[in-house]
Image 1 (cartoon, one colour):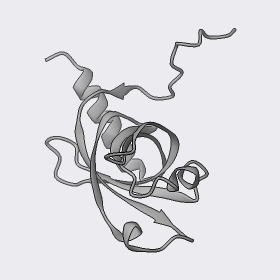
Image 2 (cartoon, rainbow, N blue to C red; image 1 turned 60 degrees about the horizontal axis):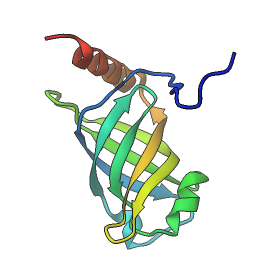
Image 3 (cartoon, rainbow, N blue to C red; image 1 turned 180 degrees about the vertical axis):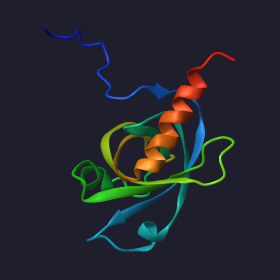
Length: 133
């Protein structure tokens, strides 16, 4: 059985809600000022498998390395009404809508390393947001 092209095939349910994200680029081979910086962005789409990050890429030449996982992204997000941030290591699955003037784009991030406890917090949050008030 094949699915229509437009139909999404997601492993996890996602919630569409803007949540601030602090993130850092990590690489075993790249060094320099941009690698040391912590950036601020937002996710507008969060689920148990990953998130959509709207944020800045400091160097456009990093895009191929991000897609090949030579550079990964450490994220730190604070769910609404939560005290402790969720920390995870992510890989870039895709990049879109890159704006060369602002260096901002949408990054599809998949969790590479995340504790089961933090993943459970995301699942509970997604379920809670979808419940009728």
